[in-house]
Length: 323
Image (cartoon, rainbow, N blue to C red; front, top):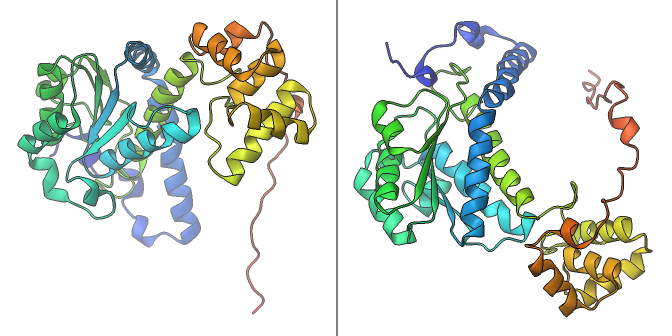
């Protein structure tokens, strides 16, 4: 019997091929409900990862995700979302996937068994001391990830492993930190794109978002360091400035234009009564934190009482067509 939890059969879904569509939905949903608790069991380890990521970023280092298959794709996804969401430089968080760019859209299954490629990929990315390398391996046993962590440590980088089954001693020995939300056997045996993939996404979201919050990329829960690169984000930027600064939309748009499109800069300009250059200097002097510059709390959430009302959500279900 394979000792990896992610490779074991799930007794609760052993007859899933006989289930109706609604029964399949219920079975998958019941398993998915276990994921959040598995991630919550790693709260201390996740907090440590946030602290390390913040410290690395403040010292000029970078964070790397390394994985194969679904795990690698999730790392690349998280890394690619940081610049538009938080206005961070594209190279601050990078994803390395076994098999390279082609593996993002087409399976390169043999790539995960090539430890030499992992070492070469880290060297090609310029991983160095002061960086933070997070290996992602749902099963906890991927040779590519193990080799990457070993090479990262040789280079002086901090290391962590994210897995959904207890990793073997060799991988644990190469990791300074182990984040292991054990999600149990999958609905379809070995299909770690399901519960393990969901848990991994939650873990990466938590580490990245936590580190960005600590760096001052939000004010309260407002995304004040976003890059307004499309119509939706430009609208969001204008709405944030309207809400925070208490001004009409046209005035907010004009202020954003004077601020070079930066929500954070626009808020400081209005709240402190300064021009763009002075606002940028104030923000830099405060380590990027608006809260340290603007001595007030962000505005309260409109309709907060609705969130906690306990009302049943609206069900948007399309009725079957008439026969």
